[in-house]
Image (cartoon, rainbow, N blue to C red):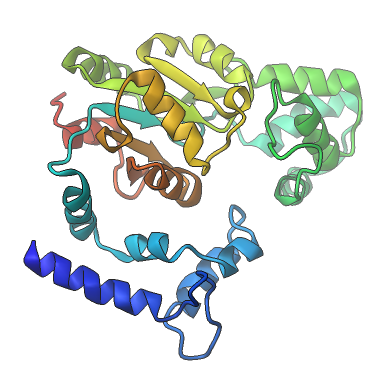
Length: 295
């Protein structure tokens, strides 16, 4: 522990060197974080402004290795316990069964959509990355205004029947499938062992219907949807709400998700532990084993 604390002091000193007292990155040629931050400026999930203004504490924690980060958490909370598992939905629990652009074009053909799948995908990305001016949140209630904008921008088609058919398609088990074929076995084992489980997702109110369609809604003790609580990841409030519903302290919960900014930074800002899906963990069985539940 003494060695770890000495290393942490050095690392903290090093990473704070490149910042002003207000947390703003000092842009100079000798700054060691210039290359590090450039990787975020091109990310679709991080704006240029967000890449330029970085929370020094968060950046320092991100630079710690896995073992050092665990030691850091022990220094705050004592022995690490995972009484609850929070799970991201899209990209972690479920994934689309077919490429989005393929579905937009396939359903859209009878409504006059002529763009190729490549054009639809490029237009979709541009539309999704634009600031959504109608609300501070993308997903409000059923998310229809936002998704109408996305569909119209992606395909050039404003036919209401086309939108409804596409919108409803994404509430069915044809549109989605579970990422991990062992999901049911793992979640049942977690519940049997006493670990509380919640889905925590940036989604509209269709998520509950989707989980029912996939016959997995009963696996979870809580489902926390951004559109229902008016807080989207990486806002820590969505993770704190999940912990409240599960009856656990944030430091006793671990969140898994596939987005470093939304899932890892957001959960850690709330005080939860967090593992990046596809990097820190690669299967739900591995997640369970790290929690201490054998499958």
